[in-house]
Structures are given as C-alpha cells and as structure tokens.
Amino acid sequence: MLTERQNEILRLIIQHYTTTGTPVGSKKLMEDGIKSSSATIRNEMKALEEYGLLLKTHSSSGRVPSMAGYRYYVDHLLKPMEVDSGEVSLIRQSFGTEFREINDIIEQSAKILSELTSYTAFSLGPEVKERKLTGFRMVPLNDRQVIAIIVTDKGNVENQVFAIPASVSSEDLEKMTKIINDKLVGQPLLTVYHRLRTEIPMILHRYFQTPEGMMNLFDSMLGHIFEEKVYVSGRLNLLDFDDGLDNEQLKSVYSFMKNTEELTHLLDISGDAAVPISFKIGREIGNDLLDNMSMITATYEVAGHGKGTIALLGPTSMPYSKMFSLVDVFRHELASQLGSYYRFLDG
Image (cartoon, rainbow, N blue to C red):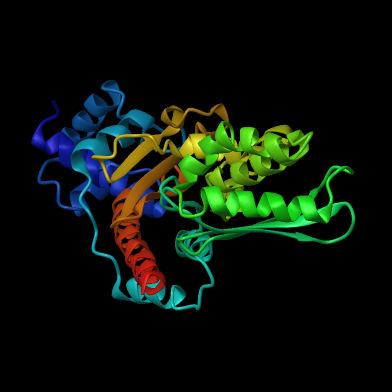
C-alpha cells in the first residue's frame, strides 16, 4: 500500500502526463499542491520508481507513468471527470438522425465515439439470440440465382444472393419457402438455427430428392444473422499513437483491425457483466500488436433486448478520468437511443 502522499504524487503525475505528454518533476508537483519540500518529493518519486509505478526519463529529471502505474491509477486513484455539457449535446445531436434499423444506430455510435475522442472505437449491438423470425422469402433473380430475405421482430432485414442447384425449379423454391414459413416463423432464431439442422432436413426429404444444396443455403443465411456484428470506426487513428511500428507491423495492425472475429474476441464480450466499465492496459489486451495501447470496454443494457458493448482503443497515455466519464455518458445515451427505437418498433 502507498502512503497518502505517494498516492497523491502518482495521481498528479499521471493526470499531468496524460494531459500534456511531458514528464513531471518535483517543481511541478509543488505547484500543483504537494505540501512538501522538493527533496522530499524527489524521494517519494524515487520510491514510486522502485515500486515499478514510475519511470525516469533520460531527457529530464521528471518521471512518467509505467504500465503498472497506469494499472494502479485506474484501480485505486481514478476519479470521474465531469463531461462538458457541449460534448453531451454533441452526442445527442449526432444520434438525432433518422435510422432505418438497429444496426444503423450501432454503426453510428462507433463513428460518434471515434470522432469525439480521436481514438479507435468499437460498437457491438444487443445480443441477437432471442430475436424471432417473422418473415422469410426467396425471390428468383434469374435461372440460377435467388435473393433470400429474412426479417426479424427487432427491425432487422437480412438479404443475400445465393446460387441454387440446377435441379431446383421455381416451384421447388415456393414449396421450400412455404415449409420454412409454416414451421419456423414466430420462432426464436436460436430455435430456427437448431431446427434447420434437425427437423427441417427430414421434412425436405419428403418432398425433394436432394435437398443438401438448399440446406447449405439456409445454413449460410442463418449463420450470417448469428454473426456478431462489430462496427469499428477510426481504424487509422490507432496508427497515430505508436511511432515505433515498422511497415510490417503497421500492415499487421491494420489487417488485425479488419478481422471481425479477432475484434469480437478482443472486446471480450463474455467478461464480467457486473463491471460496466473496465480497463485493459498494454499486455492485458492480449495481443502483442497492442502492447502500447489501452482499451476501455463498457457494457450497456436495453431492457428486454439484451446487452451490447462499446469500447475505445487508444494510447496508454490517454486521459483516463475524462475517457471513463465520456464512455459512461455515451453508453447510457446509446442505451436510451436504442430503447426509444425498440419502443417505436413495438408500438
């Protein structure tokens, strides 16, 4: 445990460094209110350095935070900062657009958060497993292609173009569409996904000689709906905060940022739901490419519709108090926007 004075010195050093980017010396700490002599403050800074919480720079007598220092700060010393009323208004105005569906709001939220912070922002919508299938259609485009349309009860419309086996006629498509609608409409998507692998193939075998091609179509289509949609905005902002990356590393980082599966894993959406806002610093993120970054992850909940996630990825020297408060305000505003949209759909 640190002494009260050591805690205050560490807090001031981190707040100053994350605001200005310059090392902090004893004179600055005296100006900021530490009631001790310069020699005493230097001794305390040396002790904090020995604890691994501060680093001494080569260019000056000042100190900068270490990764362990940032971790200690967010765990023990962080005090939320009041969010500027102008930023709150900007968030609300940015959400004032007319949206066609839920995913539009989720995607827009990532853009707003990235623009507010100049960091890389992520947004993942409320869980989809309890959504219900409310409509299914297959519309022929030509002899060998069909557009499949799936509608859920939460305002999502999915459509994809598929090639159909040469043996399948337009009459076959009509029969299959009727079977799917009779057996699956009104069912939760999780049930639909299961029955497409068990009951439906047996039913199709009664009517068709070789339903495998169509089963692949349904499997691909429903699988597409189950994909967790992670929206990312400000990908290139990430490259502004690590001058040490060479060309190959830059390519690796950018490639990583385009991989939806990797990003979903990065967000750790199965984490501790009891902690609405959490920090991962440096190696805690779990990816060597991001060792000089910090991530703030926050959950939000829309009553009756599940939980979603937003996150910010930026430098370890980000102003944690400000970002914590901004993300907190943002997650509540996003939940409110989604709640209003769901009520509109229900109405």
